[in-house]
Amino acid sequence: MVLALKDHFVWDSWYVHDGEVWHGYFLKAPRAIGDPELRHFNVSYGHATSVDLTEWSHLGTTFAPVTGPAWDDYTTWTGSTVRGDDGLWHLYYTGSSRAEAGLCQRIGHATSTDLHHWTRVGSDGLILDLVGPNAELYEADMAGSLWHDRAMRDPWVMRDPDGSGWLMYFTARAAHVREPNAGGCIGFATSPDGYDWTLQPPVFTGGYGQLEVPQVFDVAGQWYCLFCTAAEHFSKDQAKATPGGPVSGNHYLVGDSPRGPWRIAPGFLDGDLPCRRYAARIVDRGDGLFILGFADRPDGVDFVGHVMDPQPVEVTSDGLLKIQPFTNPAE
Image (cartoon, rainbow, N blue to C red; front, side, top):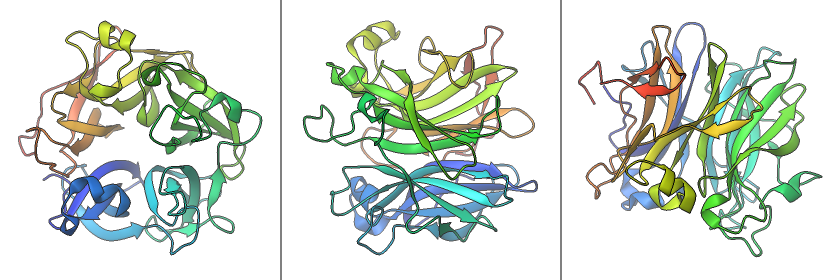
């Protein structure tokens, strides 16, 4: 069974295992709003659990924008969840405000003891913005921007495998790139404890106008950064370099370490026109790697709005990712 709600659109998702079951978090919005494009500004988080990433038990709403005014009183968008050294569960999330019409994104932090009830850290949860010495490397101001928003979203947080701290990756835009579709970047921040964060230079820039929903992981020492993008956001050079031309969906970077250097993998991992699956995650289920993402507009018209069943992913002998046919016909 797909991860779906009868009365809600479901889209971006992320997953964490608590030692017994998988917890799936996902953006949702009432189908009663009519136009699915309005879902981004009518958003909350859903929460469900599963033993196999296929059969899900829904637990209801787990997180939502605050009652304003606040930096996150309009939207709470995609994030990630990890267990900290303090024994708490940590949610890192994207927020935006009504005062800025949702155009400026920032990153927040909340904690939980049970993976369902969350408390914002500090006075308001805000932990990272495009400020400080490295902010000049990012497109940090809407004034004169080449893009439709001030991008700082989709935080992916993981332990630093080369140290005692934590690493954060996020969707952003690099400063002073003349071609809009060549200015997308993977932003980067570091923390000694998961609470205090320092903005660092981007770890990758180029190829696309935006690299959304990054996820960094390794397989046998080879590092990957999964992301999603749309056909209209390919740079001129990347469009020429992609066999068959631009598509919408999920692709990845290959790196020598979690800090890079990163390079765009050849081809395109999981793309279609119209878009079939978007905002995917690759999860190690214990019996192999599986990709999950939401069904977008596979017929080019109707937004589906559920998370598709997991599909197996192979790492080839040359270190590239390859999606295998569905093993479960349900979708």
